[in-house]
Picture 1 (cartoon, one colour):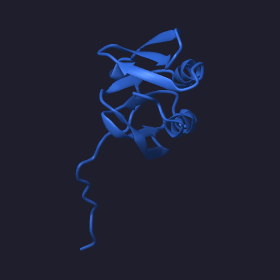
Picture 2 (cartoon, rainbow, N blue to C red):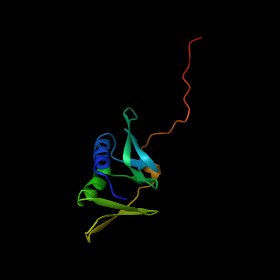
Picture 3 (spheres, rainbow, N blue to C red):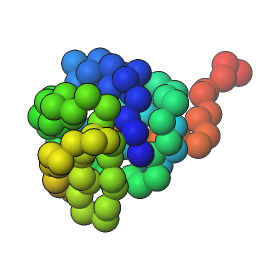
Picture 4 (spheres, helix red, strand yellow):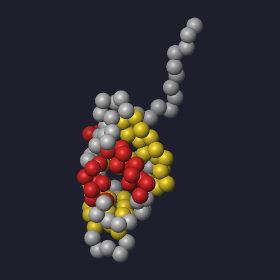
Length: 115
């Protein structure tokens, strides 16, 4: 998949909130600060097909910035970052999701009401 520049900019913004991220399947990214007091969510034009963790988001962005139009090839335990027409490639291994601070999904939230 080609990585859109808007997705890269969103990840750069998210790196200011939390240096790691759990990317889930689909077209939404979300992050939460390690103190769990700042939350951000964004809909992106890219569609991720695998769930994977990035422990150091700034390091990942640095690897991606070495390519003019980065393409990600997602595997089970790693991704390959490359660019069309370039012979250079980077193999980037995923982080274990258990060491990443990520938002918890709530399917239903009930707030107390006054009697």
